[in-house]
Image (tube, rainbow, N blue to C red; front, side, top):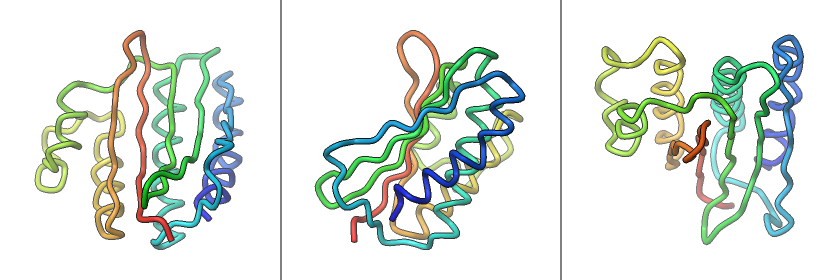
Length: 148
């Protein structure tokens, strides 16, 4: 159940968020239903821990990091959104084009290597990591896995 894993990861990030005066919000999706995903629970947790750590690190004090889980057609997606400065266009492009699989040399020091490792873990579970910047500020990085 990726919803349980996401909730546990959010609780694990709460102390670091509190130190930085950042709110962590769990956003339940009433339509998520069964949030069982096919994959390794250890890997799911590592990915979500990394996404949360990046979001907390890149969000300014007073900001919010949100965690949500949604079930779609054949997939379950856990997303981490923040109110930080957003991700570089190159990094979001690299996630879409799989460039993170082969080249970590150009990744930014602010979480790029962790995203590359998370991307590899997601793909090993037949999943996908995606990133989108928000028009005003912040970003959302999502882990999508096959639904069980």
